[in-house]
Amino acid sequence: MRLKITAVRPFDFGLTAMIFSNGDKEIRRYESGVYWQVLRVGGKLVLVFVTFVGTVEKPILSVEVKSDGLISGVDKRVIVETVCSLFNLGLNLNEFYEDVKSDGVMLSLTRRLRGLRSPSTPSVFEALIDSIIEQQISLAVARRIEGRVVKTFGDSLEDEGEIYYAFPTSQSLAVAPVKRLRECSLSLRKAEYIKSVSGLVEKGDLDLGALKDCQDSDEIVRELDRVRGIGVWTAELTMVRGMQRFDVIPADDLGVKRCISHYYCGDGKISGEEARMIAKKWGRWKGLASFYLIVARSLGIEI
Image (cartoon, rainbow, N blue to C red; front, side, top):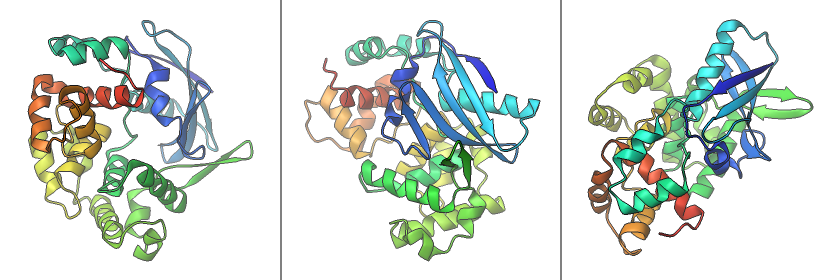
C-alpha cells in the first residue's frame, strides 16, 4: 500500500531526515533517500518507508506501508497523521522565519537551511524515556543504550527476511525487571526511573496526553518535574521532541549551550541561564531555533 502526503511548504525532507542517517537499520534509519520506522497503529505494528517525490516548495511524500495485519481506513488516517507528526509537516516555517529575521545569525541560518524541520517521536512516552536515558551522558552512548532497550523490550516485525523493532510500550517497561534494564547498560538509577515512570503512565497516574494538550508550557514543566527521575532538562527535551512545543529550550543541555556559544559568544563557556537569555530573542521558537543551531554546527556552517 502507498499513501501520498502533502506538506506545508517549505520542506526539505533530506535535510530534515539527515539526522537519522546513522540510525539503527532495525529501528529507524534514513538511507539513500528513504526513511523507515515501525509504528504502532490500531493495536498492530506497521512498517513505513517514506520517500520524497516533490520539491522544497511543493513538498510531497510517498509512504509505503507494510504490516502483518489488515490496514483499515481508520489505520490509514492514523498512519498519515503519525507521519505528519513525525516530520512536523503542518508547521508553517515561514512564520518562524519571519519572527526571527531581526536576528542576523538566525536570518542567515534559516536561509541556508530553508525547509529544515525538527522531527518528533511518534509518542510523548518515547520522547520521555529517551530523554531519561540521555541524562548526563553523550548522545552517541545514549543512542546505543536506546537501541538495546528497544530490541530487548520492543515488539518486532519481519519484512522480506529483515527484522524491525518498535519502541516498547509503557506496559512492557513497567513490568521489566530492573536487572534486565541494567543489562541494556542503564545505570541502576535510570533503570529504576524508567520502570517507575512507565508504571505511572500505564496506571494513568501520569497522563502524557493531557499534558501535551495543556496550553501552559510552564505548567507542563512543573508537572513533569514533580515526577522522580524527571527534572527540568528532561521535561524541556521531552516537550520539544514529543510535544512539538518550540516555546521551550533545554538550555542546560551541553550541546545546546555549545552551539549557542559558537554562534553568539565566540565559543566561550556559558551557563544555562545565559543561554536562556540569548534564546529570549527567538520568542515562541526557542526550541526550533536551537535545533537550527545544532544542525548548522553539525554541517560546519559558519556565519
